[in-house]
Amino acid sequence: MQLIIISHPENFHAEHELLLHLFDAGLESFHLRKPGSSAEDYKRYMDTIPDIYHKHIIIHRHISLYNEYNLKGVHFSSGNKHKTNEFMQEGIQKSISCHSFDELLKLQGFQYAFLSPVFDSISKENYKSRFSEEEITAFFKQNKTDAKVIALGGISSENIEKTLLMGFDGAAVMGTLWNNYITDKNTDKTVNYFIELNRKCRQFVRMY
Figure 1 (cartoon, rainbow, N blue to C red):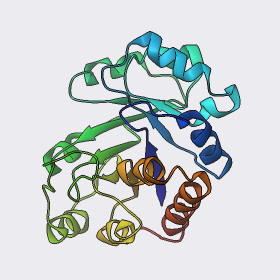
Figure 2 (figure 1 turned 45 degrees about the horizontal axis):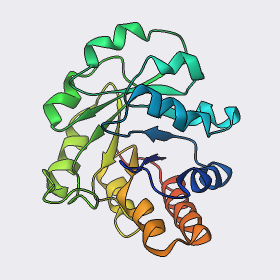
Figure 3 (figure 1 turned 45 degrees about the vertical axis):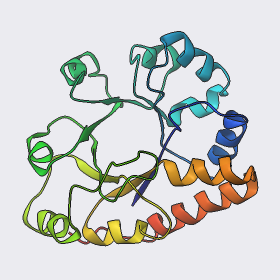
Figure 4 (figure 1 turned 90 degrees about the vertical axis):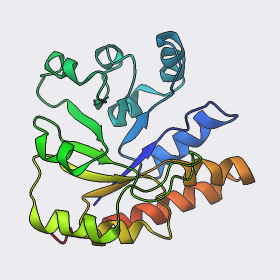
């Protein structure tokens, strides 16, 4: 099962150093998402990361930077999915955000899709789950999607195994990981938390 880490929406002290530790600990898919940041902001961020790790990064905004930095892939939303044809190169990973089962069933040409929010969001106030566990489990039992489906929203070490039991192909984590560090300023603790999440994902085989 796949574990994806999404960047904190805002920059914080020692973020880049912590990210390098996460890459060294086995992080394979990092979504760079900084709402409101300019292309120059994104470039400055990328320039702090050694080239060897660029192959693990999926970019959310200013997607033309994909080729400049030789990244892993590009993430799309409803606002820019019309640009997917610009990224037809072999090997590029394309992902997209979805918020309903109908959206998932209509997808073509993406390696995976985020479905959210699965649980009440940790990083966004009043962003509540849109689905019950029973609805999600039934969907995966009854349908096959063209793209793999990744759970997003409120994922933590306490419930990540539950998402995999429902039938997801993996989970994406944001608030629980970064808040762990921002609260304690303890790099080792945060890296060990990531390792625990990754271990729980890797030990699962999709049920449906």
